Image: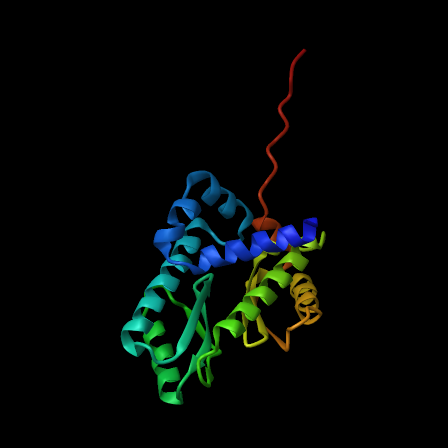
Length: 213
C-alpha cells in the first residue's frame, strides 16, 4: 500500500471515530497519552477542547429531542463557535435548530449552513467523508501548514474550514481545498490570528541543559 493511500485510510478512520458516539471513542480519545498529544498540537486550550466536545454532544442530543427524525444535522464546534450543516425539511425547522443550539452552554456563536432539502443519502455522506479525508491528507503533505490547526467538514460537496490560523495559512488551506476533486465550493469559518499570535500558540522548546565536565 502506498504511503499516501495509507495516510488517507488512517485519516478516514480517525474521522469515523470522532463522528461516532462518545462511548465508543472515549477510551481512545481520553487516554492520557493520546489526549496530551492532541492538546500539544491543537491551538485551543485544554478547557476549550473539552467545551467543544461537550457542545457537540449536548447540541446533537437536543436537536434529536426537538426534531426527532426530521432533518439531518451535523454539529461541529471549534473554539466554542458552532457550525451547523446538513438538510432541513423547512425554514421553520432550520430556525428551530439554531435556537436550540444557541441555548447550549458555552456556545458563543453559530454559523447555520443547513439547507432546505431532503436528507442526504448514505452514498452522498460517504463521498463527503472521502473528500474530507483527501483534503486533510493534502494538508498533512504540505510542509508549510499545520494540518491539525484545521477542522474540515464536507457537506454536499461544500468544504468548510474551521480553525485559528493566520491569513497565510487560511489562503494556503483554501487553495488546497479548492483543488481537491469533488469540492464544489469552499466556505471559511476561520478565526484569523496574526503571525505573532501564532508563535504564542506553538509549544516552546525546553532550554538546553548544560553538562559540566
